[in-house]
Image (cartoon, rainbow, N blue to C red; front, side, top):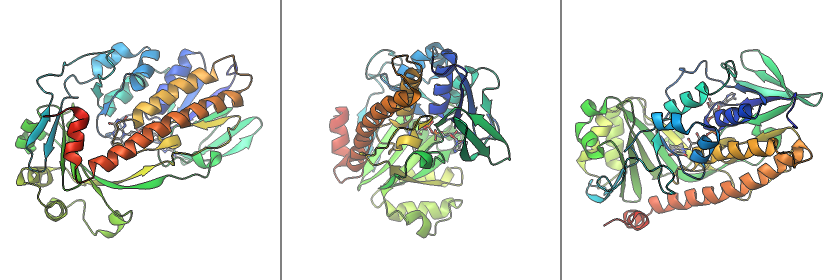
Amino acid sequence: MKLKNKQIAIVGGGPGGLTLARLLQLKGANVKVYERDFNKDARLIGSPLDMHEESGLAAIRKANLLDEFKKNFRPGADKKLIVNERAEIFFSDHETKPNENFGHAYFRPEIDRGPLRNMLLESLQPGTVVWDSHFISMEKQDEGWFLYFKNGSSAYADIVIAADGANSKIRPYITNIKAFYSGITMLEINIYNAAKATPHIYALLNGGKIMAFGNSQCLLGGQKGNGEIGFYASFKADENWVKNNGLDYNDQTQLLSWFKTAYPGWSGIWYEIFENAATPFIPRLIYCMPLNQTWEALPNVTMLGDAAHVMPPFAGEGANMAMLDALELSECLTDDKYNTLQEAISIYEINMRYRASIAAKESLENGERMHSEGALNMMLNMFGGI
Ligand SMILES: Cc1cc2nc3c(=O)[nH]c(=O)nc-3n(C[C@H](O)[C@H](O)[C@H](O)COP(=O)(O)OP(=O)(O)OC[C@H]3O[C@@H](n4cnc5c(N)ncnc54)[C@H](O)[C@@H]3O)c2cc1C
């Protein structure tokens, strides 16, 4: 096997990096994951993810983790409501959707990011993840690379895989192509103990997700396993909006009055969110990799997930693509039909770029639809609503 006696460094312990580590370890490879977080509990991580049969779940199956996944996913959390700006319900699958339907093409079980990360971490050999390893730079050393980290430590690797997300520090060693701003900004809002803090919204969601459309703007929310509800106010804005808006993201009153002005026509039912959410709210500019990006494969460095192809979240594909990248890369690197690692990396990258650009196009198109005047009707058509 081409990976025999080779040390592999995966930089970044998100869904993509950890899935790759697990899959390569199952094939007997020597893997370390260098993650900048201080330890596994260093931060609370984001909104739930829905896993797709042909990508995220395919990788989980290949990693022999489907049984663990079934213990950790959240039955019913994929149920959804589509509403207008006055929270009038136009689509609900709460009565019709089965809680569990593994193997069905359209079943998209939800898992919180924390449990997904823990499940992957626990599947790795002890000591695989080197915490507090914030990658800064690397230089060529013999046939491989010397990696340098912010805490002053360093490590050698024969093969380096960038899994360090949208602002990857390794990507520039592979290509200069940069992501472009999609025209959409999101404001992330978290509500702790939602049953108490926002009882009306909590009752409306009823454990599932909600998509509200009106005036070319959206509010997108979902119940998390720990009693929190996460919302995104999502809207078209100039790339400099965050820099220039003068908002204090710690000030709920100010953010509520921003909402009242910026989301005209949206009813008072939503105010509960702004009045009771945890602070700070987190603004997120949504970027996308050019759909036609390409580069020459290198012999011993490659990338996956958001590092390779960040895309808007409007098709729920980002984490799924990252995990499918991990699956395909692990297969390519361990397949004897390729003569060299460079050939294996090249084949992986050609397929990955092609597949990711289809997903990114769908994400961009969904983003356009969801932020257009006829958003509600278009989304109802997509989901077959009333
Ligand atoms: C608002 C929003 C909602 C989303 N919803 C969905 C969804 O429903 N479904 C879905 O599939 N996707 C969704 N996504 C996309 C998804 O979050 C990403 O595509 C996915 O997390 C990418 O995984 P990754 O492993 O490539 O990178 P990441 O998850 O970004 O992980 C990167 C890891 O690398 C570490 N790291 C970063 N820099 C360094 C460094 N220099 N040195 C060492 N470590 C480093 C980070 O700490 C992190 O652990 C959403 C994204 C957003 C913004």
